[in-house]
Length: 392
Ligand SMILES: [Zn+2]
Image (cartoon, rainbow, N blue to C red; front, side, top):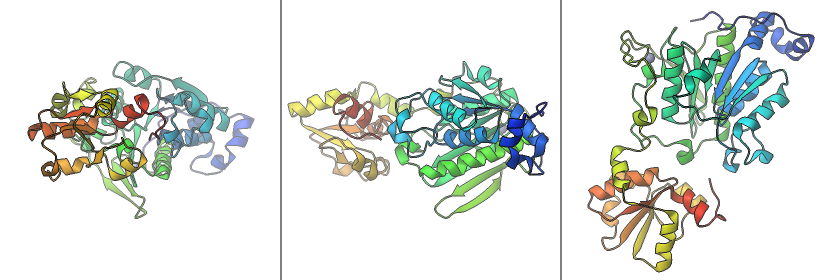
């Protein structure tokens, strides 16, 4: 299905622009009209991270006239394995500032707009309304649903991408012409079920594979060329080196873009997606200790049994001395329970405190009433107890 161009052409290209974009201009499908549409286009990139990095670099090079960058995070050393818009000297700098500097270096003709804020229900409609198209490079479900809902409510197309380990997905959601993200994924996964890239890892170059598909689709939608990924989900397997696309139909019962929508304004996305499950939240209440408290318990020689519920490879990167590794999955399938000591206080920890809270709920259910978990996990241990340890 080909669609009309999203953006009207700019009045003209300058001599400098003709020179810079000549390899586009000589492609008959793009040509002068297509390049003028890119010049007039306003594209917002949500996140200057794994997907946002390659996306912003190529959107800038392609000559998109206005590029918005929204990110409130700062560049961390562990980002550099894949977030190629940032460099070593940017560590500690705001990602939005660092990305804007790279965009200006690649193409000074781009008007860069920095949104150094967290995207929230209070600002998303305002920010999105200033752009023609959104490129979604977010990595969490709450923001994903918010991006989708805001785009549908404003009638704007957006290019979605997601990455995990060796697997990537991409699509163009544009409710006017096809399905939305809710038509494809009506419900977020249960909290704790789908590990994030911070928990499960991601092959750095996968970001380029999916980010470049997103830019490819953005250019097609803006200029109206080719067959955009509207109503199709692109699935990429980097290990098998296979791309396949599956049809995604608009769900007539979609609560957002269907015939009788029940979602007519933004909702509470944190509550909708649940950062951790209700059970975990309840279990953690009054049973959460700080990293400093764990250190004190160890120093006093308390009779504790510290369990690290992360994965083997995470444990190898950094671990709390004396902690026993039992991955979360062994609690979920129940195999870990019988080997646990009955006479010691169990202290759980993971990377940031989400997985350990889930395991804590399982242990409480199994009768380990005085078990606790470390809020903030090993990251908090590194920060407050031993900053010399490597982080990830
Ligand atoms: Zn929908």
